[in-house]
Image (cartoon, rainbow, N blue to C red; front, side):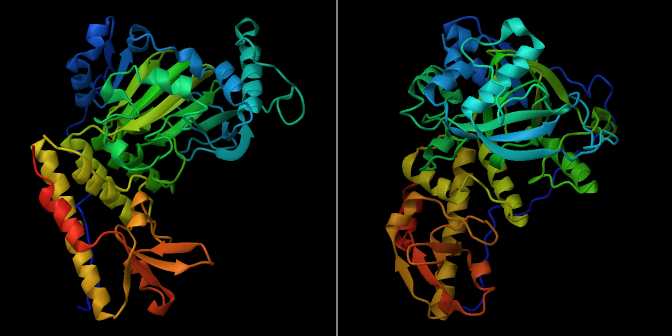
Length: 471
């Protein structure tokens, strides 16, 4: 066999562009779905989960109070006590009103959002956050947060028109953040970071910010720019306070329109930092936009593939993570985005093929439609693996077996696609090797520079496939 095998997990895939008659002014600004929880009985009812699964985005009010979740453990004061010198990413951004976006000269409305990344520590950002808080309201500076004007931290003559946003503060270390993570175990299972009802629990390792918790520290004007969650997974976001956050959201079926608008102005929808220049741009393109405030203690549930962007109204902290409910819609849209990412040479942080095989090994799927989707993924990748091995045989390329490689997902160094089971490796030095997919490996002049490793024998994959049955 001389033909290079290919594998696609979707038969056809195109960016969605809804064809509908023009919406009215009211339809373009739909009301947000709110769910109020006032009792513990109400918190565990399936109705809450039902509502979250049927709306693009939902605000859950009263749940953290009702379940007695102590959100103070996520305050800046608590962060300082737990790990003040922890390194964090800080993004400098241009301050603007929430429904507009301007260029760096403040002259033209644009899609591109300025963001300059640097590193800092929790302690340094806490001092900056406290200074901004102090300037806005001296009497409401959080207790025990030192206000400093020393060089390199906060200066009296702050840069006008910019804000600093502390992102992706990693709370995955159970030893350091045990009190914080314990509070989140009180949430209903479908909202939980680690639970058997969450597909992402079965990836096999931590994906920071997805199946682990991340914290965001903000001052007024800080922006989480426009995006869909990685591989279209759902997300949970809790505002710790004390300030509010303003959210904008667009249902999944309109992401193609926003993608097109970004492309027209030279902004990369997947990789770039973008913010709609004016909501009227979306309204003119018949895109309904949810707009709402998230108060302290409120949870925002972001459903599968929902596009969203968020701006801090006041100084606040937020915590967030992703979840993967066991629904056909979640899995199907995750696989679709996985293939779209491959086409665009954009890394899928969730290794959907490895995840699918692990789900087959470790779970029982009751949802028939979801079962068939996973089974089809196993079938397609198993055929691809067989054809790859036949191709390598025709090239007399030796394949070595190493089941220790199963613990981690692997990605191609060149195109960033997930490489499942059969890895084409190129030694970088004595202890480090780079992994390639078969297509990128064949671009090199000589196959002799590569060696091939296999995680599973074909017989093992066939056995997993046969034992994976609908319950």
